[in-house]
Image 1: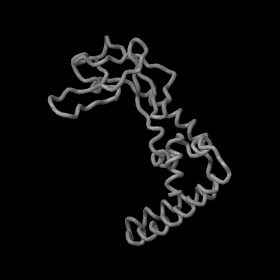
Image 2: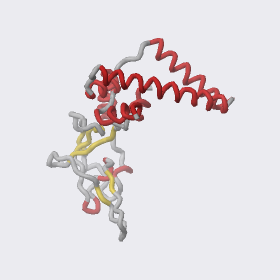
Image 3: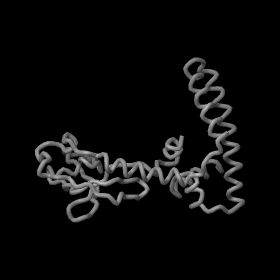
Image 4: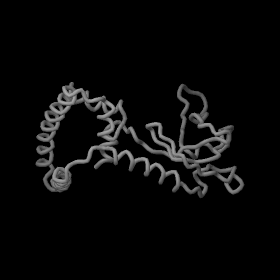
Length: 194
């Protein structure tokens, strides 16, 4: 459930395998020359930094997050064993370290989010299960229930957002409670207020 909330709150914690160059710098996007045209595709995927076609060559991999977090652990790439004449994504590169570091970062974010009371968490889980069954067996009933829920969500969300404003709760506290960044939290609150 938390992962869906994070995604809905602006992908504030979208993970990736990041790279560093030999000089310790984090490179910008790699651009791919596809001929003439107004659009030049680019990528920041770890495997784009393979040193081919004048691209930068990654020296180490590390966990990375769209919130700006970068993993402290570095996982060196041994270019003496990696192919230099084929795409890096075809090589047998172990990504488990950077991915595990990112998942640990997400655990910290989840740990800082406001926990739901057990009864409410159980109620939400049961609701998800029941709506899933209805969507398959009685889709019109599922849609009607979702329409009713939209009203309840909009009204309750507005009430909660106004209450936070009345209490002068800092946007940083709202972001931490939701497990997101301040920009996504602000957008989330504004959606209920307008």
